[in-house]
Image (tube, rainbow, N blue to C red):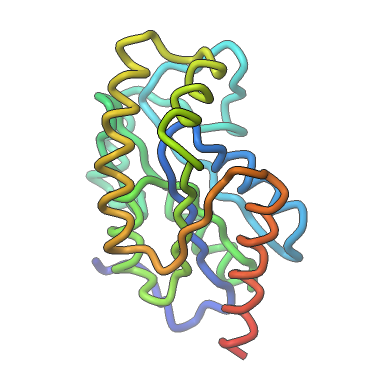
Length: 197
């Protein structure tokens, strides 16, 4: 992938993944609040915006045609089709933030993480796990964003994603207690920064 001059960057890439409903968005937002000079990348998606979501804050919501155009022009760091919709990370803001020495947080799925890891081999990979499958199902239901069929599909997908994560991720964090999960993620990032200096 003729990407950019990744040797010139001063920042660090942290990839946070996990099944739908595990709380990764909340954890990522907390990390950004607490880590100095951090940037949370906002992904693009072709899925419809829910009533509570804000364009440009939760996701950049776009049409399938515009998304494909970005793929064709090489404007995405990674992209994947998940549950019938496309998701991807705009490349420009990530590169810009890294060159400014920021810690860039990418909240992406396992497929995307594998693509991003080829571009940034030293990326820190953190996978967020639910305490139990039952807890994950309850969180998905409370969220109320999906139909019963879609929630069932997400739960089924979670098993495959968790199995794949055990192969690729260096760090697994269980989100039973939100603050503890955030603290664990923060410690992982701090340890990696210290090791890099």
